[in-house]
Length: 375
Image 1 (tube, rainbow, N blue to C red):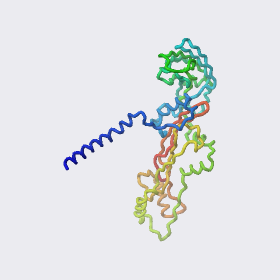
Image 2 (cartoon, rainbow, N blue to C red):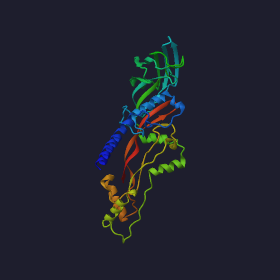
Image 3 (tube, helix red, strand yellow):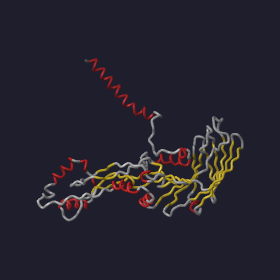
Image 4 (cartoon, rainbow, N blue to C red):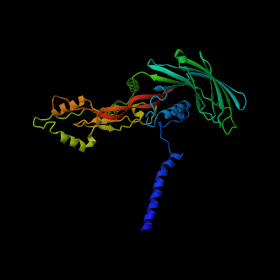
C-alpha cells in the first residue's frame, strides 16, 4: 500500500510538470501556426510588396480579430499607401556587385476635405523578383521639390524602409507630388542564387498618415451604399436590430406590479437564456459585398437580443427612463412597449482595405458591440 501511494505521488508530480511545460513547448515550437490576421490571399497579392508592407503594419497594430492593440498607435486613424500613378526607372550596373537605380515617381494625393495630414514618408521596397541572397545594402537619396534631400540606408535584412518628411510639402503640392529617388546598392556577399540582371528594388510607395475627421458612420454608409447583397443582406443585418416585442396589457383582475415583482424576478432568474445579452454574429466581408477588405478575415459585430427583465439591475446601466417605462408597460398604461435590448458599449476595429492604386489601414470606432443595456 505504501509503495502504491509513493508511485501515485511520483506519477502526479510528473504529470503536473508535463502540464506546466506544455505551453512553453508550444510557444517555442516554430511549427505552431500563428493567428491569421487576414483572409486568404491570391498569388498576385502574395507577391505584391505594397500589400505585404501594409499587412505587416496591420499585424503590428491589430489583433487577429481586428481589435486595435492600442488607441491611435500611429498618431492617426488612417494610414494610406499610394502607388505611383506614373514612374520611370534608370538602371546602371556599375559592376557585378554595385548597382545604381534612379526612380522618378508621380503620386496623385486626392485628399478629402475631412482628412487632416499628420505626416508622410516614402517607403523603399525590395523588388518582388528579388532572389539574390543575401540582399544588397542600398543607400538612398530622396529629393522632393521644395525640400532638402533625405538620406537613408536599407540593410540586407530589411524588406522595406521608411524615409519620413514633413507634411507641409504635401499640403502645397496641388494634389500631385513628384519624387525622385536614387539608390546605390552593393551586394554584401557572394551570390547564393538569383537571376543575373534581375532588379533589386521596386518602385517606392508614398505613405500618408491621416486623421479622418468625418463621422465614422458616414464613412461606413458610403462603403455599404454600393453593396449588392439585397434582401439577403438586409435580412442578416436586421438581426442586429431585432423588432421590439410588445407584451399584452394586464387585465383589471391581474395582480399589481409590486405584488408580482418577486415572482417575475424569480422567473427571470430561472430562465437566463431569454435575458437581454450579447450574441455572436460572424460573417465575411464578401457577404457584405466588401470583397476589397483584406483584414480581418472574419467580422463579428455581435448583437444584443433577449427580454429585458422586470427589475433592471445595475449591470444593465439602464437610465431612469427605462425603469419607468418598464413599470408603465407592466401596468398596461397606454400603448407603451417595454424597453429594448440594445448595445451599451462598443469597441473599435481596425481594417485593411485594398483599392486599385492604394491600400488603406483604418481604425473605425463603434464596430463591435461590447455589452448590452435595456432602454
